Length: 201
Image 1 (cartoon, rainbow, N blue to C red):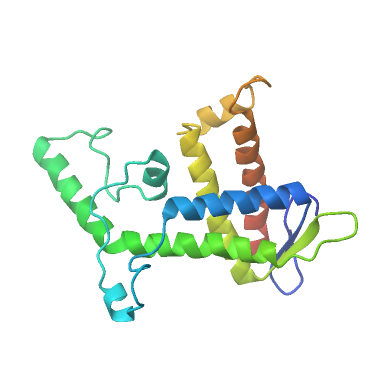
Image 2 (spheres, helix red, strand yellow):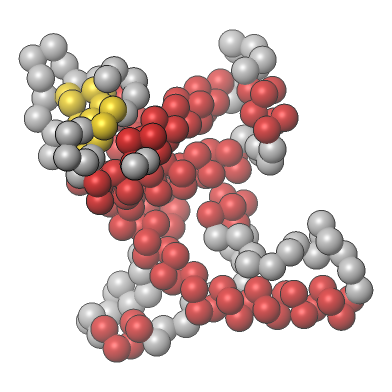
């Protein structure tokens, strides 16, 4: 169990985490929450009807991490130029799709990150330090979504775009300032991979 998720009888997953690992995951989840930001109407009295019909942004985020978390629904004109008219049409379709979906996507990612924080805060420490995290099937799905988002966020900061970039990470010198972020990226990937296996039938 140390370092990787294992399935629990009856569903769910468990992993042993030490205090440092718990602190790192929680800190990353909090940073992800801050990056995603509060939901629409967070500073106003709750109005379910207004929230249901609230429109999201139509332009892609300026931050590269948020662009990775909330990509355009249609091809990037810079990667697939086509004609000017085709590019404009793609931008219009992407803007419309973003306007009606991004708020829900943000809410889902926010809920997943909060789920990670809550399960970590509920842990009972063991005598030798650390704790065994036990997740229900639903909590496992929240963790899976949050781990994916964390890796996307770190990958954007590291400018990882494909598998070749990932291979280069293993060859970074020890004194490279990106090394701690790289280690977190690879470690979260291992957690994500083993968590996926526990959800398979």
